[in-house]
Length: 430
Ligand code: MEV
Image 1 (cartoon, rainbow, N blue to C red):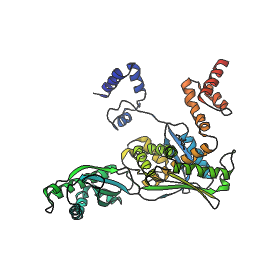
Image 2 (tube, protein in one colour):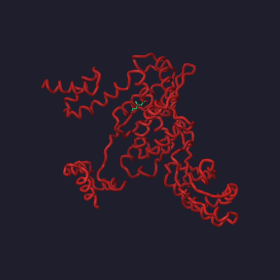
Image 3 (cartoon, rainbow, N blue to C red):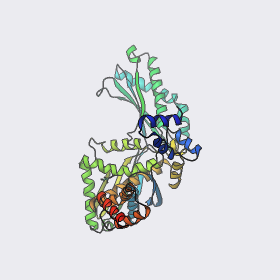
Image 4 (cartoon, protein in one colour):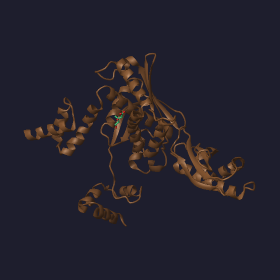
């Protein structure tokens, strides 16, 4: 079907007012046909564009350099919370970051029915051939300083009969590296199978290695960045309702609760991911990969726990995040999507390592903002303030009505019903 045909098909078969459906879908088309075509071709069966707000969180001082961070997100309070946390830490030394590792992982999963020692011997012999087989794929990556780090044979038969794997590690520099890694893995798999068939010491059964799949892993515990803030406890006055000392203690307690209680840890980490995903999305990276890897890392010691840590030592409050982030600043959407290109420009065209640091900071700032609200005013005050516009838009408030109600709710607690009542009163007054 043509694009028009697909639109009519979905409208006629799945919605009640097909004319309106078509109009809504077309309303979000871009006026510039070339730009629209670019978006159409990102995926299959595109019918329109799906907008998300792109906001900017300014005042992020990271390793003494000032950043304004673009964030693509629908949740009303996220950009506000990030900006507030950035401003708070800007006058307290800012954020400090360190990349702890950049190693990516991929695996060839295969079935081998035979003697494990023989397989191990065979693997030692063919390992250079596996690497040589993918030389054309690796050439460019090596020019940029990356490539294959290692291939290891792992015996997994204690967990699953006849299951072995090639556990492979890579350095992909400024690329997220998914295509590079998967191409290498498929190359390794093919050579492994072929070489086994010609290996004289194997029995017929042993020669018949079955490749199950070759795919990168989104679990990358050695591709990790650390972001931290610290200041003397006495400088931690964060809200009028609480002293700096009490606040510091409550922050540490809140983090410690997330460390021991998985129900809390999941929400705690979700708040971190509010900041992380928004920057990951704005910079054209794969937020599903980041999410999967982050939550797996949070459970790496066998129990799901907090990704952030907090301490008070010798009168100094320290708050930090360690998170695995496989990000790219070349390839993928980075040169294709005009807004992604712009977001990277706003970030001063970072390389992948710099982007890891910026993204981690956004996550730490978000977590600081969330916990600060939770242990002082409660989350709803700030959340409802930001959500106010959504409620007013749902009610069909005019611009002047919005202005006067925003003013009103500076002094009153906003809840959904309170907004409805205030809105109706304002209308009835007229
Ligand atoms: C909401 O999107 C995120 C929070 O629930 C995070 C948290 O509880 O720490 C506020």
